[in-house]
Length: 117
Image (cartoon, rainbow, N blue to C red; front, side, top):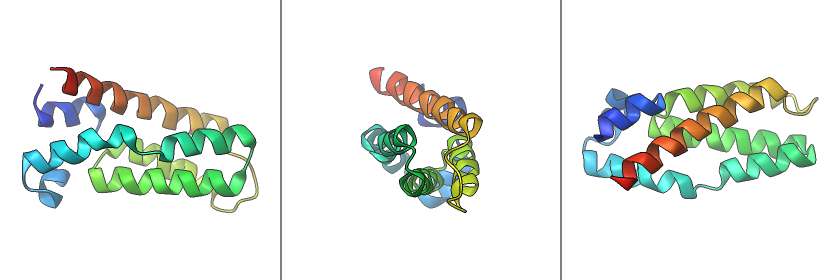
């Protein structure tokens, strides 16, 4: 699988990331670092605790990371959850949170497949 195929499979935007990081080696470098990012684990913990403020902060952080890496579908899911939590008046909406989990799994599974080749 190429980096471009990896982006297509994970629902990312290869053209966008090529504008930001015009060398495929740089894209690969940062893409492979993504699984070590702790924002998803932080989001999971905050949601489990019912901590609205930390849920917002971690969803917002994950959204930013995804936007920087052009992980489009995961970024959209994290953005929807961020906006729902922005008022800090209610806990994370279950459906929005599950969409983030689903897209996160797709990204991680794709990166794992890419790095195993």
